[in-house]
Image (cartoon, rainbow, N blue to C red; front, top):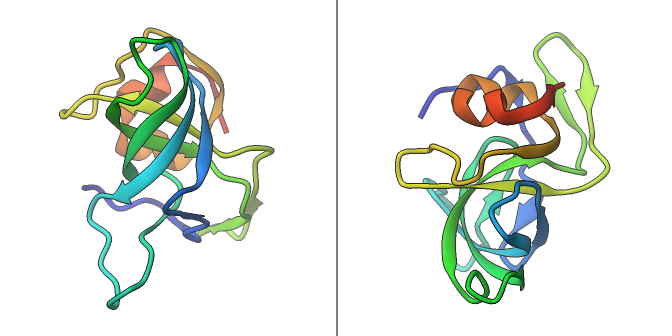
Length: 132
C-alpha cells in the first residue's frame, strides 16, 4: 500500500455507519474491520482517509443488503492535516465499494474525493466529480 501525503487521523471506528457515495446500489454501510490495522489487545480497529475497510451493507437494494464488501474511505468528518499545513474536513463520512484489486465496482462516484485517495487509488479518483 502506498504512503499518502498527510497525517491522517483515524476517526472512524468499528461499527461506524458511512454513506456509500457511488452508484453500486448500496446507500449506507457499516465498518466491520480495517485492513492492515495493528493495535493493542481489545482495541477497536480505526480507519482514516484512503484506508481499505471491510463493510456490511445496511441500506440499499435488496440484493446488496447484508453483504460483506470491501470499501475505500474517501471522505471523513474528522479534521486531518496535510504536509503543507492545510487542514481538511468534509461534511460526511463516505466510502466507495471496490473489488479485491482496488478497482471501483460502480461507474460513478458522487461528490468530491480527497487527494490522498487519488494518490493511493487513481481509478476511484478518475470516476469522481472532483478531487479536493
